[in-house]
Length: 398
Image (tube, rainbow, N blue to C red; front, top):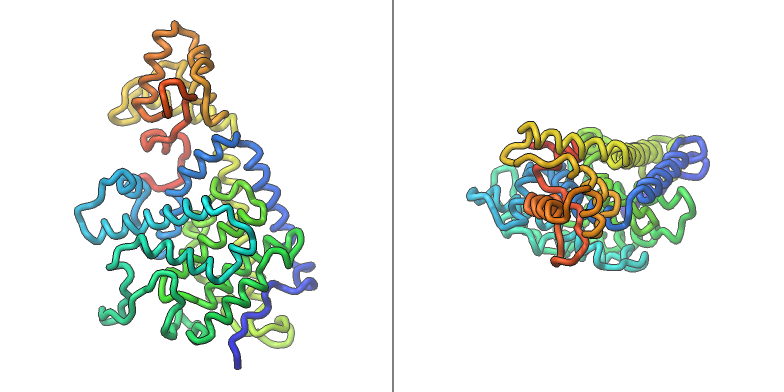
């Protein structure tokens, strides 16, 4: 019997009695609201910052515990002296590389939903990964396979209780996957539901020897953006999945179940557990969007910038000097706009031009603002010493 991952999405009758359409609409609405509350330049800065956060959480699900500050150190060329930790830092950078690569592709749906492009995502990731992390070991520590970047697996695998399809069927299954989940086949809330269902079905096919989880999450992020969620990248689905890692793995495994009798759909796999999986994914995404909406609320952000300056001035931010109270106006204005004109920054400080320029020089030295030239606008930045104050609980600090 040929392998079959039907149903592709739950039937209309099952969806009508579930909360999935409402959840999909809620997610799309919240994501649009988040995009609307940020200036385009601020959104670009947040996407850049969140690429490290996304890498941290997606890799954490796979057992790589490299912390955000260690990833940023690697971005600056400061790698650990421990070869194993260095390799994991490079793996984190590989994930960031693929995120940037995806954002630069100007993807159309036909390109994204093609087996070749999914292979390219895998290839882009593994070409950046150290050779040591391409080797696969058995339970006795012996190398049994090597990951070839962008190549479908060449051996059969078992993931928990799930026996993945035969390697000879992968090409056909991936063609089916890209055809049945192409967003042009769905309307309205069904587009979002299809993306969430496809996340599991890609896991079920397990097309690569390794790296399937990361490719699934990178592909899901790209698919959500492709169907119109413009704030994707500001919010981080992987954060929610990592924070509920055991539930994530449980619902993934349950969605592998075969159909459980006549009242469980008409496909080969369980419709009931697919509904459960999709509900988990939608609720996790909604939680992360709402979290970022609250985090980036103007009044709340203004208060946290104020709190950061107060912390600087009473010595709670190690190794950083005091700041004048007027600094709050400049930093909040920079957050609002993403980039603030020099003249506006100077005038908002309410001090002599010489004193204002001296303060701006300090903010640039402290990496709270940046510039591309001596006449450019001043760009809002999120240095590590400010991140815990700007975005409490976004990531662990140790």
